[in-house]
Image (cartoon, rainbow, N blue to C red; front, side):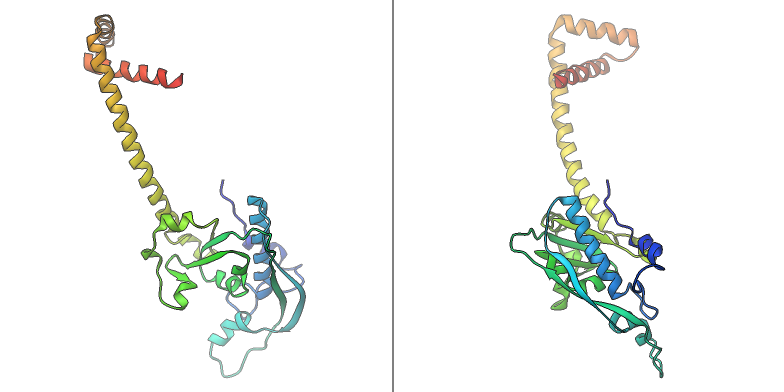
Amino acid sequence: MINYIDFNQYFIDHKNDSPYPLYPKHGIHWSTYGACLVADSIIQYIEEKTGYQFAHFTWDTIKIKKAAGIDYDIADGMNLIFKLKRQKMAYPEFYIKNDSGKFKPSLLVISDSFYWVIYGLGFANAFSQNQFWFYNKEIYPKSMCSPTETKNECLRNEIARHDVIIIMATEATLPSFGWGFIEEACAVFSYDNSKNRVKEDSVLKKRVTDLVNYIKTDDKWYSLIRKKALEKGIPIDSMLVIDALWQLQQEAKK
């Protein structure tokens, strides 16, 4: 089962009844208020799925003021002579309610730029460790000091040391969902599984060979094999392998 939250559908369903704008008119991402709802929902969802209770993302007051920062980034990027009229937006005064007795999981997020908004809110403070793999390429916060790329990391180790892994994508980037992370992770674990299968196949092959050699020394059993091979119209060697496999399967069921 894949755990997921469809925030896109939630925003569509509530765009007309939300007390504050979920998307700004002059911004490219969800609004600061919308991002706060997302952050709070993700934490509660993780708690529900894991059974752990950990630090909460919350706010007591909301300030209403003219759009700024991410709520006005498209307008700023247009480099206009005259500024566009700023929309009134909601800005929750949020904080992470930490408790030394609460569990703080380690978090790995693979996402497009929409996670930057949540990251900027201090979302990472609810977790013991937080890594943001921007488009599964650059690793933050490490890249803020020195460029660090995911291709130089051991994927198996990174997956193992995180309690929660989130892959987030907006509608526009869904065709590239995961940006190779899912395929790379499957390849890592499938490769190990294939090695195990090769090992298991080698063990089975030896057991079959040993049993076939034993059957050849048992006149009564070998005579029965020859009779079966004649009835089925197949070579004796093939019948020996078939019978040996059947015998081993029966032993495995005991």
